[in-house]
Image 1 (cartoon, rainbow, N blue to C red):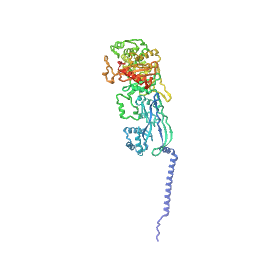
Image 2: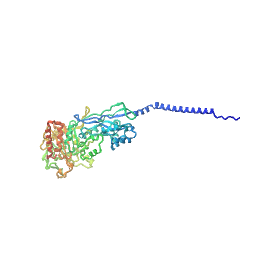
Image 3: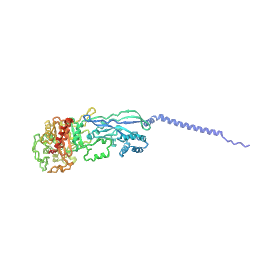
Image 4: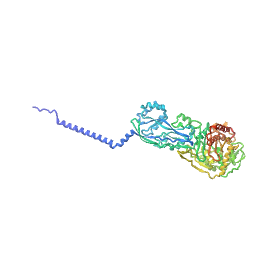
Length: 635
């Protein structure tokens, strides 16, 4: 009987089954061990790392911008303040697509190409999760539109912040300057941490000069946010340190009077206190509204200012360089007394022209026919006799003129706490050789004697030199800043001219007083109604040369090529409280055009704002001052 074939191998099946179970258990245990190992690595070994990363998604460190310091005039009038403004900001990490978000925002609120371009520049410089401004000065209507469409633009917020505002507008444009958005170039210089919450920085003027003081120190806060980036709560806060409030020496009322005195004209007025160096007023006309620059000026407005032939952006008070003309004569007269070249009684023949020895060229006086057979120092200052100062300059020589002029701050920056000041020019032999590659000639000295030729000064330098005359020798750094908080800031004393006798100072002061008081004085039109003693000197600076023998004809010359009108003064002459320098471009006559402007400024400071009861009288006085514009007075 055949043997039955075995259909099932139980032993083999059991062995295979045991192997499979064992392998499965090993795989399961291995996987379990891997999971346990990985879990322990995440939860134990790398706990701190992943906790920090998790907190970064949930907790953020946000900068808090400091409040910029306020600026006041000497009487507490607010000149620069901070007002609320709304800015549209974007956090890139909370967006699904930057381009799509910008397109949606543009549907809701129109964005300019400049907005988007500047945003992308700022985006490239920001830190992770930092809100980047996209559009400034968002209106209430635009805020409402964004609120309705908020679900479409996650990561887009409206940020309320304080921005700079200048209540006085163009009146203080060239004193304060302005703040503007931080540029790429400035980012390479400033402290990125301290400016992490700030979008603006001082660009020019006082705002730039005292940027560190006005800006303050940034603060920060740790905040917890949800998955959509919405802030849920503040975990920790460190308040920023606000910028310092500063008070200026400037008097807003005097500044206003000075600005009105220049209205419709191009020029500058600088008034300062001789004994302190404090700037009372500093005006450059025309001006401009600095508020246009705070959040970015439009191309239309900027082109209008840039292409204006009257150059409103140009700070004539600090950057305008003009021949000082006859306003320099009191200083050269004092130099003549100091070096013993002349005495108050020395007389010089004045036929109406001057010639150098062995030279046939005639340097003519502004008054044809001269000022009489001969003139002394006082008469030369009062009548602004060119011939006297041609002769004096030749006898002194350029070396002594340069040495003495520099003691009044001429030819160098004054060091005022502002930006972009120019130095003017007090020429010398060395300067001529270095800059022009030539020798100095006596005829060039003669021209310096009447403040022409190579010589140039800024209106600020003229005011400083006038203050040195008023204080009898004290050369001070002019200062806009009066105090920081309650701490006063004094103007440094650069030097004191102590080797000039008081008799010589008094002689020059008397002659400058007679400029106003004498019937022959070039500033005699200012005497009417004067209640204090004023010492002054007029000047008329040529813009284009006039050939020898030709007569100056205003009607035949282009208006912008006519002579500049200058005037310096200090008062009261016996105890000076204010010194003033006025330059009016193409004004032609210093005494009758620039002089009344100086009178108005001094009146405003010494007499104060007129009360309503005396307004008619004040207006009458102003009419008297204006009426001298037609007088036949060259200087």
